[in-house]
Length: 168
Image (cartoon, rainbow, N blue to C red):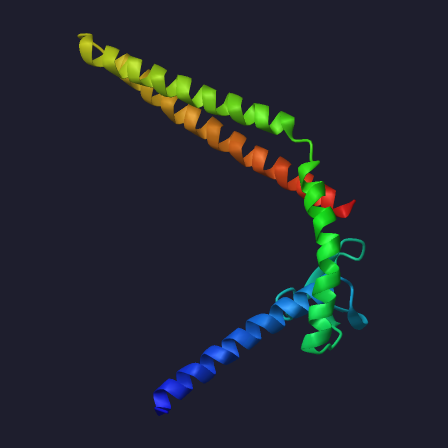
């Protein structure tokens, strides 16, 4: 086989294996299958499996247990049964208020855009329409800021709902 082709294949296999090992280690840590105790560190970015301890207000890292590929496949098989209950929890999140506010937010933005267009047309048809032009552009600017701010708040609220459902 060509030397370059062999090198490419070896690099691709190594990258695939590294990705598999990372996913394996993340799942093992998530399931609590770790070796030893937590090792606390001030450096949050120094280790792969870092987490934050809210009580101690420090970062820590853990090492997952070492398992064979066959054992890991068995762990994944048994973990699937718990994943299905977590996915059904996702549907039980009550975010009707967020949906309603999202719809109201979009309707408000559309109304403001229409009002801005009307003001701009009025500004062009009136002799001294500079005031209408300024009001229209200000309305557009303010409505876009309000819309974006409301979207951020709604995203935060939905993320908090998801986090809360995973904690329970």
